[in-house]
Length: 231
Image (cartoon, rainbow, N blue to C red; front, side, top):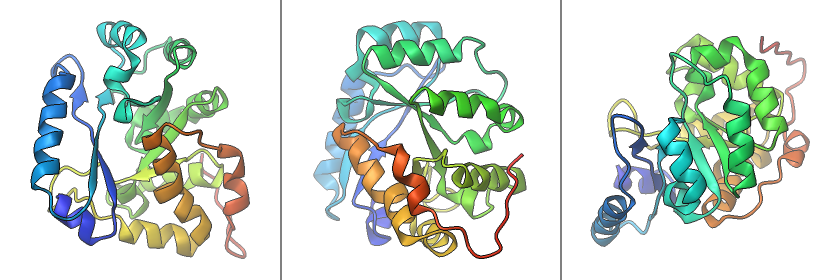
């Protein structure tokens, strides 16, 4: 997977094992595994640690006490993944607590979550409170179905997407290759927007720098005659 990512232009990748009730997140073990990968990877790609964080009570309490344990590269951004079955009614309050503790939640692949698709006002509220949004590259290419494609495109149109990532699982059906999705964004909107979503914003997140979301709409150039109603 690392070789495929490097061959298709990726320079950095974040390893994101789950942190939920089924998979206990052990930072020491993750760092050892990442170090092993760095030792055998000959493609020059940089590997960073992180996790797909689920909003269980134990996780939240531990993260508020130990933010760097769960955040990407030990910095200040946290990938948050919601269950397809339920969204905690106090999710907004949880995000506010995380932001106060120095963690910026990044909502991962909301376009693939049927609850968030049905209640897009949630995403608007969270982004309005300084959370970020990451969509999956393959969603933009229709590989997760029409509903995911429509939601992802609509949120890009409304300046609610800050990062596009691979969410790769293997070298066959869920690959780390990003070049087709990059070209899609560049062709439909602009090369500058593609650069922001695939390169500059992810780089800021990995290094713990601020992501300026206010400029996204200036980078997005709608094609002539293009109209999209996301919901």
